[in-house]
Length: 248
Ligand SMILES: Cc1cc2nc3c(=O)[nH]c(=O)nc-3n(C[C@H](O)[C@H](O)[C@H](O)COP(=O)(O)O)c2cc1C
Image (cartoon, rainbow, N blue to C red):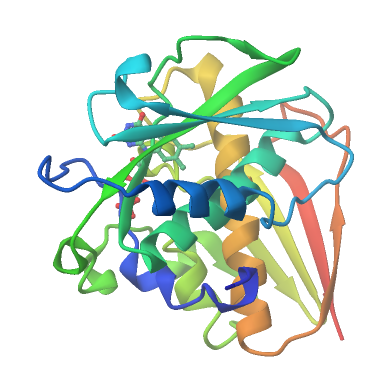
């Protein structure tokens, strides 16, 4: 079993798969492993109910991949960040197993409810070949470090967390490092083709993805830290406080 703490190498291998080789299929064992792994991912918030449905891609509006993992959640404080944090672990885990994946915010599922919980987002995926994964992560288009991180850089953290995936590559994360504190914000000033009314939804999921990258990177470098998640933040601020890490 691999756990969240050794997914660091997958930062460099993962990418959004938009083309799949239709001659490759996932075995029953691989599908069972995915379902098994869903019980092992670590949520950000343990008090939020989550359900998953693993369906054939044809049961959704998604046009790529063999299957889709549909995520349903209770709508509690920070539930979107929680979904991002959980599903990114799966995206990285899939890369480890040569399963190509793509977050699919545009997709619509067959059912909007599952056991009373509301549909949030899906991950489309399918068996892929090793050579189809990312070969040179430095070529992935991302904002410059100075645009997202202020304060002292952390080796092997600062320069890798910025490769986290985000809706339309909008990269809403901003980081302020001050002594033993790392403060994470969501910028509401992102320029994107996502309709403004939808930005808080997608960018909140993105923030969960980013926290997942941040924690894997910190642990990889053996930093010990405590996380504090903000609640009830004003949504009209230029930078919304998301989390604060205190390093020991
Ligand atoms: C919350 C979320 C929603 C996304 N929705 C879509 C989508 O609907 N269609 C798509 O092709 N890619 C989607 N993506 C993938 C992003 O476009 C992609 O992560 C980003 O461009 C960076 O590229 P990379 O993942 O290859 O590093 C989504 C990503 C996230 C995190």
